[in-house]
Image 1: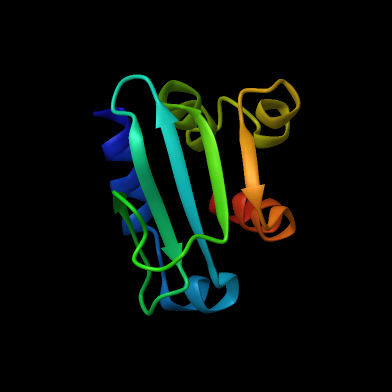
Image 2: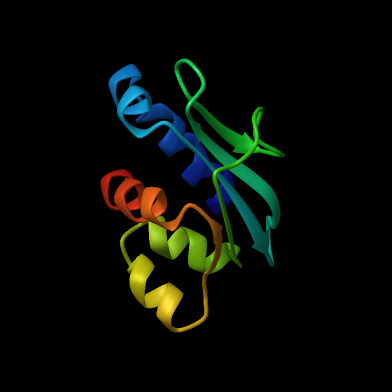
Length: 105
């Protein structure tokens, strides 16, 4: 699925240095095809990403459709635009999110 593939790519791109510098855990509540709870852990040693709840409590929880998630991570939808247009809702540490998302994408 496009969502699972996106998380595989994200996990493959992780580095120790990036995890050390980010120190954040992101949880995604996705609706639609391949929806459900997904996560990116940039806090635990080595980092990880995938389906289900993160291994530790999330710093940021984002809710959006799975289609918009894929668009965001493939550069077709800017996070700020998604947020301002109501396609993305965010709970938690928005400063951490803003800085990290720019680097992740």
